[in-house]
Image 1 (cartoon, rainbow, N blue to C red):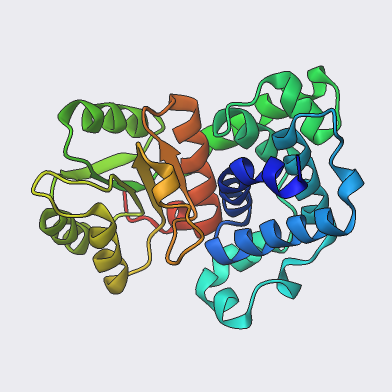
Image 2: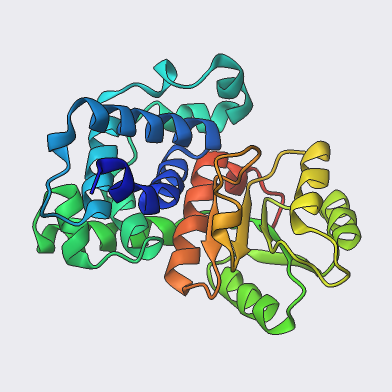
Length: 267
């Protein structure tokens, strides 16, 4: 089997991890491309006997630690990231945050996280615990939920409030979402794609972003529809049915890169 055939099923997940680490589609895609270019130049970096996904993630982190993002992202894309994101990207993402992202979002076991990071299982466990503490210390922000399923909306509301955030409203249609966002200006948006009246959560988000910048996390049962390689694509998404720890991790990442928590008017 060729290398391209082996890695093809894992590319959407490689892009997802890269975007979550970089905090933007442009930055994440640049690192994903650099990872693939490195693999083309040195195929031996992907061992024939190892899990392909583990090998790709390890290679991504190697590229992440050695290639400056400013050399990869076009200037126009850098300007779109905002001051908070550029400041965060000036330093590498802490290993503890990467470890938690791998286990919470990608569902890797502690042992697999250790393989990706090249550390012991005990070290991986300690890194994950540290990240959990860091995420718990995130400053509270106002959250808008765009979701037409009452039970899912309730679960999302309970989760974000348990982290100290405040839900300013639950919208079930595009029009309602845009109206609530413009009135309340939330610091974070959690959005589904298909809404009650047949409208699109993606369209609602695009409308909202025309008025002001806000980090957005898509919560969808079909993540592959948003990871096609076409633009625009979300930097942050969680797959339904979502795992609580996965969503907590992504919320922490989104607020970390946007600086929205610090700027939120809540309380």
